[in-house]
Amino acid sequence: MAIIQNRKPVTLGTLILTTIISILLIMFVLLPRYRDYTQKKGVLQTSQATHDDLENKKQHLIEQVKAMNDQKEKIDLLNEAIPDSSSVPDLYAHLESMTKAANLTIAALQAIDVTEKEDAEKARAAAANTPVGVGNTATATTTGKAPTPAPASAINAASAAPTGGLGMVTVTMEANGSLESFDQFLASLEKSLRLIDVQSVDISNDPDKGLTFHLIFKTYYQKK
Image (cartoon, rainbow, N blue to C red):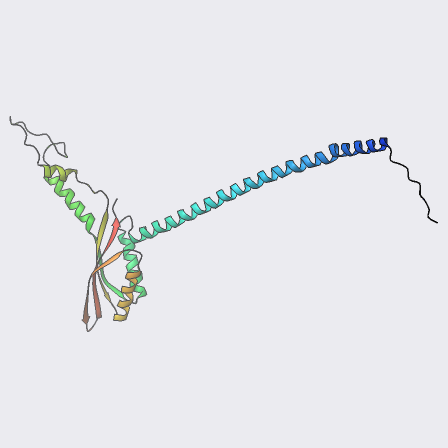
């Protein structure tokens, strides 16, 4: 025999009360939590966008630094190939290092700054050819005649001055050693960072000294 349970009917008041409680639960519990979630989500998205922007700027700076370092390396190589002065002592040291590595013995070594010598000669010639009133403060004597105008060539020579470009150093060198050592030295010259232009090579053989290698070459520098 089935047992019939008595169920209380849901009254209108209970339904209304349940609805009010649900609304209050939504208003005071769920909605604040949803607003808090939405706010935190917005802050997180803003933070992520800021982080991405900072990362992009950081990467851009890294690329700029790398480009600057690459440019600096190129400038350093250029300064090695063509230094900003004749650097004759450094050139001597460089040649001595290469000859020693190739088992050659330097018998004679001389470097002449051809450009500096030519500039000095031009300056002396310009000073010697400069007439009174051009490039100096000498006073002309009064003869009743108008002074003769200075030749244009003298004025140009007096105002001429070095304006940059390349300077040149000529090097003459004698070294003793074997042919194999000389070949090794020439290979080192070709690989040298400093630009060296070999002009002439001559070889002589002495019964006492053995082979002697006579070289003339040029190297360059940046004039200021």
